[in-house]
Length: 127
Figure 1 (cartoon, rainbow, N blue to C red):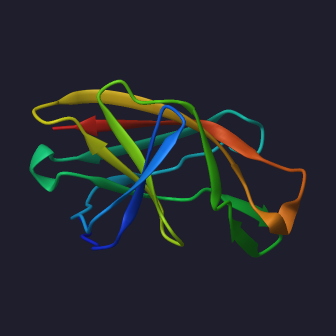
Figure 2 (cartoon, rainbow, N blue to C red; figure 1 turned 45 degrees about the vertical axis):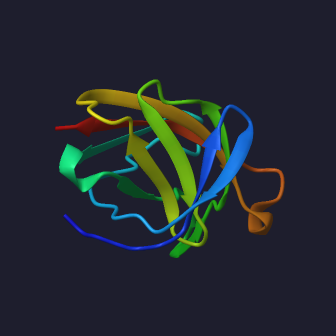
């Protein structure tokens, strides 16, 4: 698993908070289907890693990949929080003591592709 330190913004029920550095580690993929609105990402992490760093999904045109860095949480996780690490991606942090599957959904945009969005859900398995 890869570890990264950065500042994150926590998104919870329409509010945003800036958090301090966090260890983020996990493995997985955003999967396919984001352009059709049915993105299906799956990530795994150890509870001891405290957080899971998830890259932004990309708009793909030919060989060009452009991250969708503007994120709206459409379904919040039930057992944790989701934050945004500016320029990096999302950070899922499970509630203390939680182990199992948690799921959240997002709608993602970028000014480079005005009027278009990428949508889907991500399942994080905490072991």
